[in-house]
Structures are given as C-alpha cells and as structure tokens.
Amino acid sequence: MKEMWDKRYSESKFIYGTEPNRFFKEEINKHSVGKLLLPGEGEGRNAAYAAKTGWQVDAFDYSNQAVKNAQAFFQSQNVKVNMKQASILDPQEKPSNYDFVACLFLHLPSADRKMVHQYLMDSLSPGGIILLEMFSKKQLGRTSGGPQNTDMLYDLDEIKRDFEDFEILYLEENETHMNEGGLHQGVAMTIQFVGRKSKL
Image 1 (cartoon, rainbow, N blue to C red):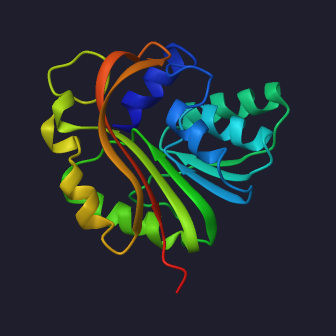
Image 2: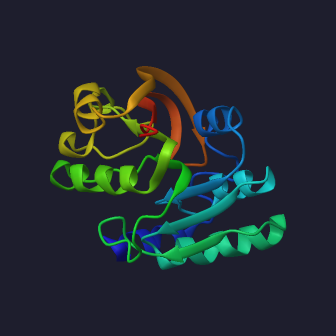
Image 3: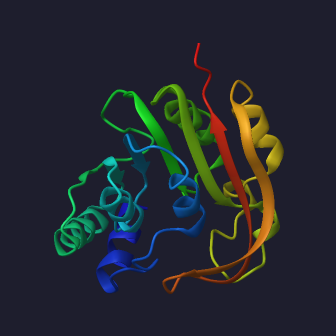
C-alpha cells in the first residue's frame, strides 16, 4: 500500500490540488487558532492553509513522497508545519492535547477504524473539536473519487457509535460537487462530521 501511494505522489504532484478542502476551510475559520493535528495529510494543502491563518500545525502521512512534496510546498508558501512520515495505524507518537483534529478522506478497512477513531479522540484536549469528511457507502459505483470497496466507506451510524461520547455539532450525508485536483472530481456522496469532546 505504501509503495502504491509513493508511486502515485511521485508521478504527479498535487493530485488533490493545492487549495484546502472546502468543508475544512469553512469550519476551521469558525474557531480560535490553537494546536491542530492533520493525520493522512497528503501533500499539505490543508496544513498550509491552517498555518497561514495562525494555527500551530502537526501533520503526518503514510507516504514518504507525499511528505517530501508537502515540505517543498510549505517552503514555497513560506509557512511552518511540523510534518512527518507515519501511519495512522502506528502513529509513533502518543496522543497530545490538540484543540482541533481533522481527518479528511482517510479511508481504512472497517476493522481498523474504531482504533483510529479512538486515537483521534485521545489526541484532543477537553472541549477540543474533531472534523471528519469521508466518502459514504453511497459513493460506491461513482467515479468522482474514493475506494470502490464498501468496507472502506462510511455510514452515519458508525460515526454516531464511535463518537457517542462527543457532542455532535454537525453530522450529515451530503451530495457534493468535488473539485480537488485530478482524483476528486464530480458529484460525490460524503459524510461530514464535526464533534466536540467533553470538557470534563
């Protein structure tokens, strides 16, 4: 899997574009700046945007090539981001106290997701915000992006179940028009979630 992503990121830069994800941009602008974690950040488009607006950003990606591309992008944008190579299944660092954690289109087998979701929750400070956008199971058969494997797609019940201790600020399954580089193009079905960790 790692070799596949390295090859994909080496063949063409910015395969998901250089602009931040629209849902992420709209949501993060509602919050005071602080510490942000971006797992599976790819070539750094969301990290660069957040750093420009004052966030202290930590990010990682499974692909060495994605990290190299991202670091060059950060330099070209004159922003500071702490980005490393790591897998979300073995992040190598203990969860820290982040104010905001965002995970965008990071699709994993269902057997791994509860553990990953727990890591994301543990990474938040009390009162911290989590944001997810993933392709829903209704994306199956569409060519606008995402894996064509129902086990790697999401549904609303899974989010409600895994984040049952969080305050749900927003949770919707939406039909949206994707325009993110060459690999996310066209009408797609996604699940968007924003939740808040208890302050207790």
